Amino acid sequence: MSLWGVILLLLLLLLLHLQTSTCAAVNPCCYYPCQNSGVCVRFGTDRYECDCTRTGYYGENCTIPELWTRVHLLLKPSPDTLHYILTHFHWFWNIVNNSFLRSTLMKLVLTVRSSLVPSPPTFNSKYGYLNWEAYYNISYYTRILPPVPEDCPTPMGTKGKLVLPDAKLLAERFLLRRTFRPDPQGSSLMFAFFAQHFTHQFFKTYHGMGPAFTKALAHGVDAGNIYGDNLDRQLQLRLHEDGKLKYQLINGEVYLPTVSQAPVLMHYPKDLPDDRRLAIGHEVFGLLPGLTVYATLWLREHNRVCDILKEEHPTWGDEQLFQTARLIIIGEVIRIVIEEYVQQLSGYLLHLKFDPTLIFSEQFQYSNRIALEFNQLYHWHPLMPDSFLIDGDEIPYSQFLHNTSILMHYGLEKLIDAFSRQQAGQIGGGWNINQVVLNVAKQVILESRELRTQSFNEYRKKFNLKPYTSFDEFTGDKEMARGLEELYGDIDALEFYPGLMLEMPRPGGIFGESMVEMGAPFSLKGLMGNPICSPEYWKPSTFGGQVGFDIVNSASLERLVCLNTKWCPYVAFHVPRTEEEAKPRKPSTEL
Ligand code: HEM
Ligand SMILES: *[C@@H]1O[C@H](CO)[C@@H](O)[C@H](O)[C@H]1NC(C)=O
Ligand SMILES: *[C@@H]1O[C@H](CO)[C@@H](O)[C@H](O)[C@H]1NC(C)=O
Ligand SMILES: *[C@@H]1O[C@H](CO)[C@@H](O)[C@H](O)[C@H]1NC(C)=O
Ligand SMILES: *[C@@H]1O[C@H](CO)[C@@H](O)[C@H](O)[C@H]1NC(C)=O
Image 1: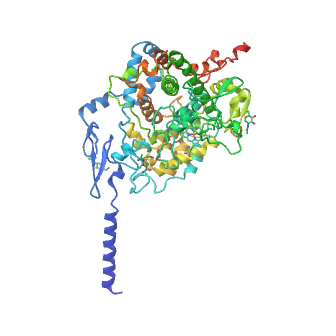
Image 2: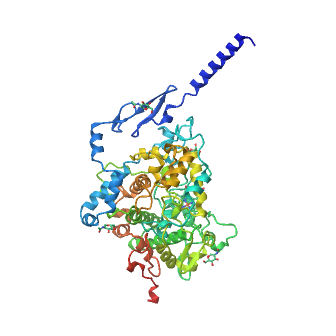
Image 3: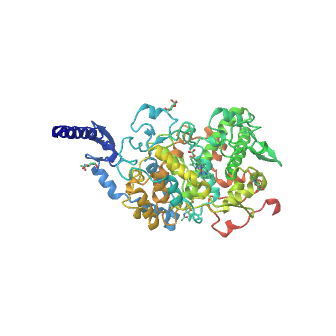
């Protein structure tokens, strides 16, 4: 080849190089330049603009605070400070709990938390920009942050390595339990099973359509875990008499019907005999005796409420009795969740209060859309112990899972007593997931990658938390920090779910700051966004009159259990804390 030939070739190569590099101009939004919830929009090939409207900030990247934002930032205590105050100073909370301040602060908690959840909802896993389809198609889980754009240089945008760490390796190295670490807040298995039972009414991934979709189209507390997630299923589960649900009697006690009595799809092992196949609102609740316990309790409660309603309204037919009882059940669920479940989880000394009227004067949308991030965040499998201690027996997973005989074998009372006395595992801090459920953690990580979930630090920012600057600051554990650093390369590339699970727990806490600051807004918005909490619904007539309204307003875990059992066991979301609580309970007939 001549010299000219070589020069021509070189020129050609140069041209080609220039061309590919302009084509491959990195999407500038992959750098996440827009801060403080500013919206990044790409213009041309390499330009972007941040829309800072109503963020309280301005400037190219929405980084300069407006005057009132400055003042607000100056006065606002950090989440850790607030948490410290809310979990210390008994004398102070003694005064608050017994005065008007309880309502004032509860209102503040509800409004401040809920305001972090966009309503109407915004993005989903297909659409990283606002559009009608994303708003309208409720088969999608919504998303607080849009997916990482497809054309970014790394899976997390521009930070971190080209390939994320192997999910199985992550799970085995950082999540797998070494020795059982109990929850320092003392949560019981009764709490853990409630968490699972309650959340599965709105976390119901439609695996047939893909991880972006949900089967629970009500997007909130609809008691679909009791009545089924569609009308056909509901009709099969109903007795069509006095508003009641179908049931079977065993030794004179009300239990869940079998699938031959209520033909609905349930997931059971093939070899399970027909009389052990219980029919429940949620198709997987035959999995764990803890879930069948709650299913039985709510079945009995529903039918108990129907009896009371019928007494009040002898003219009402099956349909009105059923529908009204369902609203009462939803009200009971929300009250128990706020006043006992969230109370236990938060560890707050402020006595939480379920009172929809608190926020009637506030700007609040009575609607909700379940977010994918909320689902991922709620994979609390570390709660599960290594085995189950019931009435002197230690039952391994192999005999516990899908064993519907356990319910009838011990009876509801003994199971509730046992679950309330056994401590659940600490959720945060790593190394606390039993091998039996480890694969679920791996699965969440894989799905979150398929769905291009943004990094843990981007979510920290979205929820007004400071992004971590190093792995050491993040975990406080040297071994874990080094391991994560080696695998991820950059703290800004740490993924959402591993971030939540491995963050250093708060002192004496069940998990770290992020789980609380991100979970609470979703939770409270979902609970208070329920239609029964709206001014139009929240009145006695909605619940069949004062008697029904009183049931909602006096609901508690203990009443749910003790109004529906032969004798009253120890029942609580926390293991016994006093000698009185620790005392053995016995059937009243034996007393
Ligand atoms: C021994 C007990 C448990 C077992 C065997 C178990 C098993 C599973 C399995 C197999 C999945 C589906 C994973 C997938 O393919 O994506 C799952 C999902 C899930 N689990 Fe558990 N789990 C248990 C306890 C719990 C507890 C106590 C919680 C507490 C909240 C929980 C929360 C969740 C959530 C939120 C999902 C996602 C549900 C969905 O999107 O459909 N699990 N679990
Ligand atoms: C805005 O962010 C971009 C990308 O991160 C950066 O290059 C630029 O300097 C920032 N602009 C200002 C004014 O800070
Ligand atoms: C929602 O979107 C999915 C995926 O595009 C589609 O299959 C489904 O039919 C849509 N649902 C409705 C109600 O339009
Ligand atoms: C305030 O209420 C909470 C929740 O019921 C309770 O745990 C706490 O003991 C009360 N605080 C004081 C100091 O009485
Ligand atoms: C189910 O539980 C009962 C009672 O604890 C036990 O006797 C039985 O062996 C268990 N069944 C299976 C299949 O493990």
